[in-house]
Image (tube, rainbow, N blue to C red):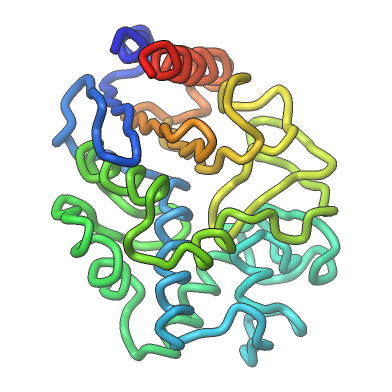
Length: 279
């Protein structure tokens, strides 16, 4: 697809990308087997692992969490949807539970700790067994924080994008919950992009909603969900179009943020236009 050739103009050292449908990979560009740090794309994978654990009965989304490092009244739903009041990084809450959408690495890390306690497994092992292995993501590995430390390849992540579009690891009703806007009235900030009221989010995944301007394309439906990462990475799945993309780079977002916020939407719109034109 010619949309993929736009990736060669991204001002980064190395980049690779894929366009994916629910049936699998449509096309790729770059070194699809090269390992990149995903940064916050890791949160989508964490959300999927949590959804699997909920289905297994290991954890509950709405059960109160009895941990000293989790704000009173917070649940896994709050933690995964950035509604717990915990800060971007750090232990001390900066808002009441359910008051504001505060993007929080700490919240995702606390959710992973809850799962570890419930399953008596390291989160990295649970993620590998629940998500990586069944999707044949053999080049993917969590090397630290559940919020931002997965390393993977475009080939592996294309498999996950296909899962996001047409899930086989979780039931349809669980998928609906993951991609449903949680606490819909909350305002907040998408770091590096802007402040939005409301600022929709699902369980581990950002939801586009009516955010504008945004890192996704103008042609993406409001139901599109995914994430971008501080390592210069991006990924989305548009269930209305039946299409998704993933783009990984080796150049930090803050080194080309102005260009990324122009080039990522253009790439996204081109991919959707080609898909619709060929449908």
